[in-house]
Length: 251
Image (cartoon, rainbow, N blue to C red; front, top):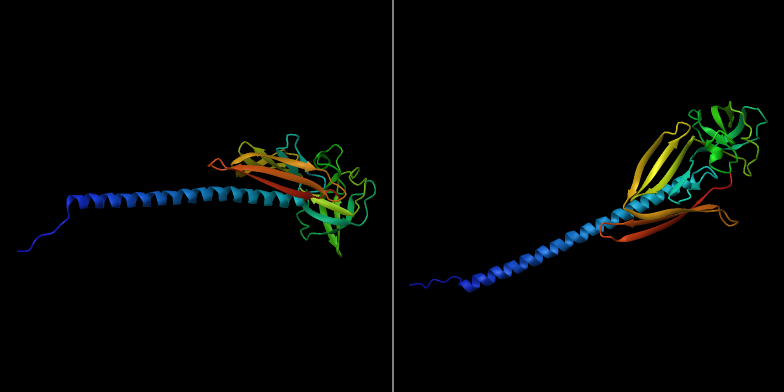
C-alpha cells in the first residue's frame, strides 16, 4: 500500500508568509516607482513651462520697437510694442508732407493700412498716445523700383522732428503686449489701442514668486530686461530661473 504524502500546516503557513512578504515588497517597489515617475513628471512640467516662457518672452522682447519696453514700478509686469516691419528711409518728410520714401524690409505691403510708423521714439507713450505722439498712421504703401512710398494723412509734426542714426523706420500695430506675474501664474495680455480691448492668456502656473528688472543701456550693451521666476511644484520644491534679454534702444 502506497504511503500518501502532502503539506503540513506549518509548511502552508510558511508558504503564505513568504508569498505575503514577496507581494508586499513588490507592491512597495511599484509604489516607489510610480511615485518617482510622478515626481519626475512634476519637475519636468515646471522646467518645460519655464523654458517655454523664457523663450517666448525673449523672442518678443528682441523684436520690440526701440525704447518701447517698460517695467512696472512693482516689477511684476513688463510691457512693449512689437515690430511688424522695418525700413530704411531715404529722407525725412518736410513739414506737412504726407509721404516718406523708404526701402521696406517686407514684401507684405498690402496689409499695412492702419499700422503706425515711427522714426525715433524715446518711450512707450510716444507710440500709443495722441498727445506728444511720435508716429503717423499709415494709409497706403506704393512700391516702385524698389522704393516704397508710405502715405499717411496725419500731421507729421512732431513725428519726424529727429533723425535716426541708422535711418531706420519701424512699423507697428497700435497695441501693447504685457507679461504680468499674478498669483501663482504668468499672463500675457494684448491691449489694442485706442479701443482698450484686451485679450489675456495664461502661459505658466505654479509660480511661487518673480519679478522683472529693467537695466538702462551702457557703453558696452543695449538696454536689458532681467526676468527672475521661482516655480514651486506639488512637492514643495522651489526652482528659480533667471534670464537676461538685451533689447534695442537705438533706432
